[in-house]
Amino acid sequence: MDRQQEFVLRTLEERDIRFVRLWFTDVLGTLKSVSVAPAELESAFEEGMGIDGSAIEGFARVYESDMVAMPDPTTFQVFPFEGGASGESARMFCDILLPDGSAAWADPRHVLRRMLAKAAEKGFTFYTHPEVEFFLVQDGPLDGSVPVPVDNGGYFDHTTHSIARDFRRQAVLALERIGISVEFSHHEVAPGQQEIDLRYADALTTADNIMTFRHVVKEVALSQNVRATFMPKPYTDQPGSGMHTHLSLMEGERNAFYDADDPQKLSKTARSFIAGLLVHAREYTAVTNQYVNSYKRLFPLQLPNVVTESPAFVSWGHLNRSALVRVPAFGKPSSARVEVRSIDSATNPYLAFAVLLGAGLKGIEEGYELPPGAEDDVWSLSPAERKAAGYEALPENLSEAIDVMSKSELIAEVLGEHVFDFFLRNKTAEWEQYRREVTPYERQRYLGAL
Picture (cartoon, rainbow, N blue to C red):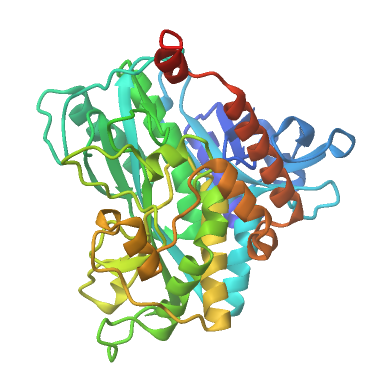
């Protein structure tokens, strides 16, 4: 037994923790959990916990359902805010294994680990820093009617004496208490919309943190009798929730994206990485934006006097918030990074980070050339002007995104055959169900007029 496992067992005894949750996700990024008694944890470290993989989306077929959830002791964390009469609880993320001890190819954590190992072979460590947006709404409704936001605030509004301000304070305190560092928190553009930015970390840690973040945010919201939702676009006439994510590659202590001699301070590695993100953007969009609703955010209703910053066109630029990939201003070499703005906050972070890293590494491997950056608001250009500038649109709906992804050798390689095939089947079924659904919009528009 290693030191980290001993630390976990000792902490459970010293703090009298009665419940240990073993966490993992399915292919779509839904958090799964099995609780074990502390007395069972020592054997779980040695042998894992048996689970029925056929009951988890995308894990296994019924006739090959036996799988093992192996706790990762480095992810152990006590949840003191879930205490009370029942005592404190704790959680660990798990790696999913086959009965023979080999990694399960359908485990999203394993998909990301594979890509991180590929980057490591080239001398790179991959870091990510997400800006997570979400909405706070009055409890419910879940019947399809329009939810009521908890406030009428706007961008950076203080919202004095409102639920939102107190919620963010409580949520940040809860995250900090379990070791997840928060850089910023503020009110976003739309009524009820919030943003909390997590501090950068290696991609696997960040993905674990995002899954924990969603759980904590929802728990804190429920404690205040409101509901948090990461739905990409709950309102037709308001902005949607993205998860703008900053990416960087480190070579030891050196930032691989920085070059002091370049006019824009971007290394050749950075330029090829960005080019990879652009060349393969349409191919990975089904992963970074995996729901029907995601495309309502990317291609919103165009309203007069409303600036649209959703990154719907394949372009990059400095300080250009309409671009798909933005290069933020950075004051020191260690801060050199790029920001991908298309991802929404409902994505599976393990798969999203894997495909982004895969696209960037492909650009480096093949020496992709970076095209000129976009200086204009891409949305303000006419279709002819965008075409002339080479700004290709992202897929405009889930069906198109699935079709483009299905033809991508890169995404198939990154995800692995099992995850690739299941993901496409699942999303095709979602689109077919949505396509056949008669909506309130259709009844409102046609029932009386036709």
